[in-house]
Image 1 (cartoon, rainbow, N blue to C red):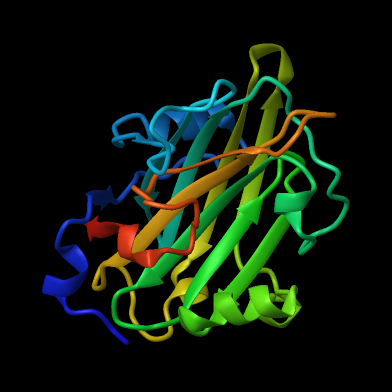
Image 2: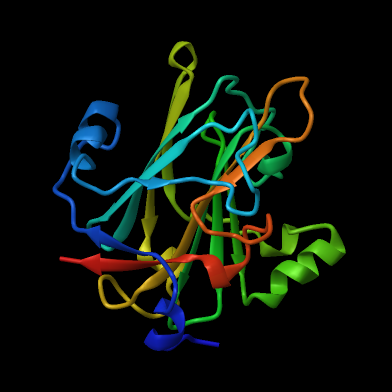
Length: 228
């Protein structure tokens, strides 16, 4: 159900999302400059008593412009790779991936958007929180895939520096059923799967204070407030 301001803001971290000036979306330096004043959001492993030995930091900055949310992520990564070869594959099983979750507080549906280092994308829309449990029971999220292009993304990989970057432009119509920016606040969470080739399970992390390792736990997502 839609959330009241009292119910969704209580106990949640609040991030202010400011309008950005224009910049060249195909230039990493231009993007870095545009997001320089944005407060970075860091990833963590809140469900663990201490970080895993191979945990690597991730920093996300946000802004908005022209009825779209803008996201810029820097991911530290000692072994950057993916086996993904097409959009809308199960990217989290194929290698490194950056994940974004967004839900306006005025609706039940939310989106999960993923980007791999080679810029392959996965786009999912959940009609409500119960849909993820149903997808897990089925063992498939194919029925939740958004088949048309839902957002723009670009990636830059710097293996020698052990880091990769993601820029994403998410139109408000991809996330919101009716509302426009900056009228409605959103719940948000950013997460990642960090694999090591020939290694065991990936190291996962999230910007949310999850009590268990489940990125879909909306009760622990943060609040995004759009400001002009």
